[in-house]
Image (cartoon, rainbow, N blue to C red; front, side, top):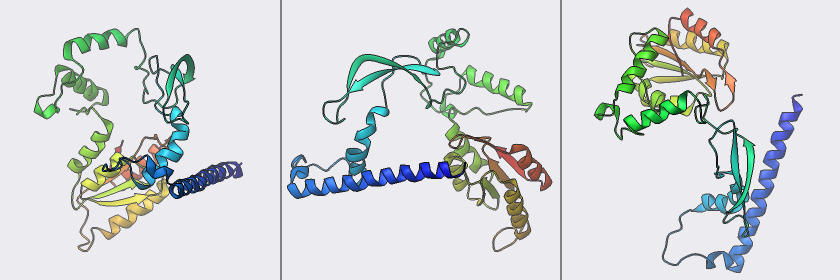
Length: 276
């Protein structure tokens, strides 16, 4: 049961390696014959250079029909995809009249609101007519509407807190809030597979960052015990603040965080826990 995933990974990388080698050989022959350079415009800098150009021509073109496919329906769980064909080895793709009904495995439509809904859709249309699609401004510069304030009140009541702040983007939430929560003299203990928004926010905070093994509460406890005992670097003073940061759901891996165990450790060592 353990061998099969490793064999799958090995065969995948082996196939990719073969394709890479043969593509390099093809490029070499094109350079020798001069056909490769004949298509370059004299006096103009190439848009793509080096491996990026190689990847687009030799690897991406083979499978580009599987990326950015045109759709003809709402991006629901199942949606209609327009089939395409190519007469020049996938350099250009032309649409057909054929439509395939496909399972959507690449959507951020977690709550299912992207498709038509009897309750939500009419209210969304009404809100768009009244408030427009966007305020075209940051909230601090005049982009706050009545809806923002109402939503923050509802969220605060739901989580039983005095107030909340609503961000329009999850990436901005983590990367902007962390530098405001902790700074120099603080310690951030972060899961090794946390989202890049958390990584960027932690790096921008100027706090000391310690990474523990993914979803491993015992390793988290070892790190906390060690860093609390050591204190800050050079001065060995106690940390001004310690924050443990994890993802509730690791979307890239499809794993759930061992949240209850991690919260218990945070309470044991009296540190702040942040669940993204």
